[in-house]
Image: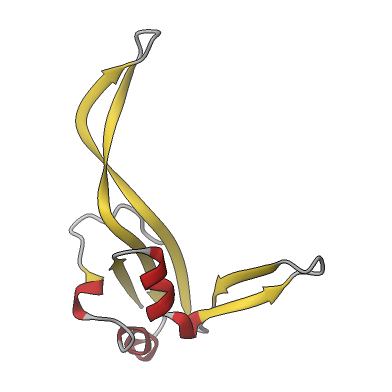
Length: 109
């Protein structure tokens, strides 16, 4: 198994590059739902990641609240059950879409 940690400039870019793995489902009420679908892969749409700066601020009641900063990009994790599945996804990506975080913010359990 291989986990791909992916980063895109936007959600739109992720959906465009990986459009082959997006499916639509029509609800009985006519609403359309989109979802990730590729046999042998699990998708975790992380989206925006925020990093704790180590600084705090104080609210009106005197409580300390941590300050977070946004990490650039739209993030998506994919758990691939075989190397073939990982390669199928990698074919659709640019080299800079695949990142290797030393400590991922979110992982598969």
